[in-house]
Length: 144
Image (cartoon, helix red, strand yellow):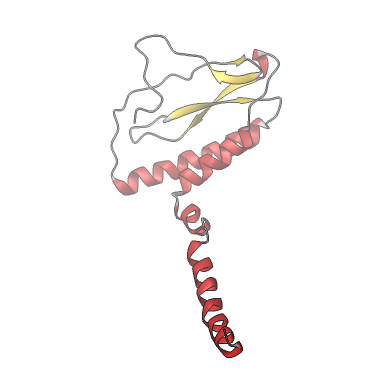
């Protein structure tokens, strides 16, 4: 192969390699996250603050209302631990998240089943706070 032929081939292949690399790179996830509804972003922030909710006793475990149903009341609850989280900060984020959810519900005209969900107790199970199971006939936390 001649030197000029090699140079020409190299000159053509370099842009193709760069173009192929650009096409195969992972998409930027930042726009997708910023496009998420405010209530969803705040719920993610809340879950990060709650973390793994480690505990040594039931006294460290608490439940926190999240979201807002169109008819009123929370959409569900999360268990958290006072061992690793600051209750006042969690409550502030949860209140902002519920207000954002109420605004989204109102803007979309969303309706719900209007079932009232009682606040569940939280307990320390295997070193982590979790919501206590409900008895038969109670409302599912995901019902909206």
